[in-house]
Amino acid sequence: MKIERHAKIIDLIHKYEIETQDELAELLNKEGFRVTQATVSRDIRELKLTKILLPGGKQKYALMQDQGIGMNEKYLRVLKDGFSSMTMAQNILVVKTVSGMAMAVAAALDAMHWSEIAGCIAGDDTIMCAIRSADDTLIVMEKIKKIVEK
Image (cartoon, rainbow, N blue to C red):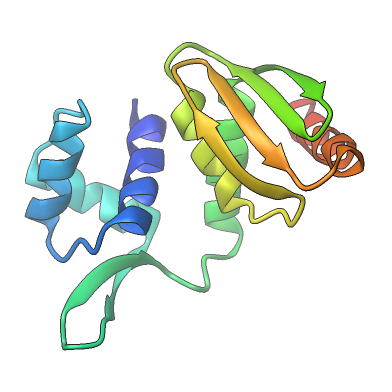
């Protein structure tokens, strides 16, 4: 549940300008994660979120630019733990996950910033990744295979 919540937090801070822990907790609760302010505070610390200044003086949570290997390892673990199988459909990669993990795995794939992936759409246990070309789909499949087989 923690991995899924962390993936959702990353997704939310990319979608919205979240200024406070209370705002983040409210959004998480609306998404079905029952959290307290203390939980959100711990998650912010573990994810190494920081506040950045926006035009007009408002602030928002963002991932630190220098996340180093720690964040990358979290994404790798989410991908490895949630992955079930994958199928190529030309430039669409269909990734099957453990039930309920598709959003977390899709967030992890997006966070990898692989140039071959244009974007991912997730359901409950299925992800559709739009890949730039059929050749790139093979490259992404190989990258995923290397991660999940470690």
